[in-house]
Length: 116
Image (tube, rainbow, N blue to C red):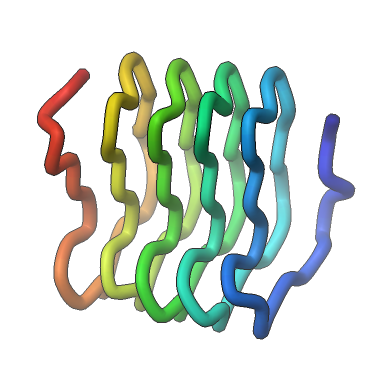
C-alpha cells in the first residue's frame, strides 16, 4: 500500500493510523493539527517507510510507533507536537534518522521502553 503523495490530513483523532500493516510507504504528505497523533503505527505494523512528510502541530505525538517492528522514519519534518517521535511497547529495530525534529514541547524523540 502506498498513500498518494501530497495528501493533507487535518482534524482527525489520529491523522493516519495503520494497524497491522506491513510493507507500506507514506511519502510526501502533510499530517497536521490532529487531536492526538499525526502518524500512528500499531499492533504489528512492520517494514513500513515514513519518508519526506511534514508532521506538525498534532496535540500529542507526531509519529508514534507502538508494538511494531522494523519501520523507518526518515527525512521528515516533525515539529510543534507534544512529542516528535515516540517508540513504545515491544517495538524493535525501528530506524529514525535524518529527520528535522524541532519545537516539540516535551520530547523530540522518546523511547520509554529503551528497546532498539
